[in-house]
Image (tube, rainbow, N blue to C red; front, side):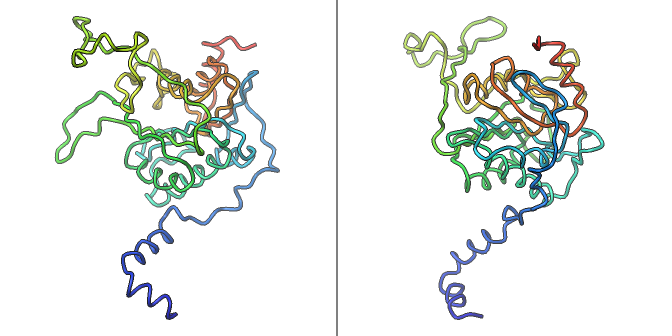
Length: 296
């Protein structure tokens, strides 16, 4: 063993252990050069004046996007909970394989993000803990947003997981942060206000309360009347808030996991440019646009 290394290990064991963890942690994956598909011909399956949708693996699309060209990224990847999203998605990977795959697309999302751009990642806390550690070495942490899912069912031996995690990072100081206000909460039965605000109710802004990092007002999309596909689907309200917070008109929004197309749908309504991919059937997204938006 080299003398200098021996000295570090014996005289500074705590620092040495930290170094070894950093060097060999799962997020220090070997980059896959085969992902560089800039010369690969990718054609959108659907286009509007503002956006393009590609039916492909996001790891095929992302390398073709220019460095620092995207204003905001929203990613809602499969949660690795063994759900059925279609034949092309394996949602039951070994933990290390899932994380290595995640770090590949996260690395690309960091690359394409503009200076001052924002990145949001929606997942369960189990995975966002790892994602946050990875992203903190590349971007600036802004918030861990808890999105309440309003359930409290009994599970023996553990707390019930009652929120999804929404990570919010930026590439340096965010160039866009639009102040969002929410209505003062009221009782759904009597319609009276839930809090008294310590006797300072008259000092509250008439436009509403400042947005916090706990979102209790995002309804889940469960009823088939409102769903655009059989698998999980995100609320329009969630994406409207994220994009209104982090972007302005004509900004470019990227979503590498199109799903039911909620990000694209909301971006179109808010007059944001958008680009994204979906590896499975894209017809629910296309049908949603033709049904709910008039595309010129």
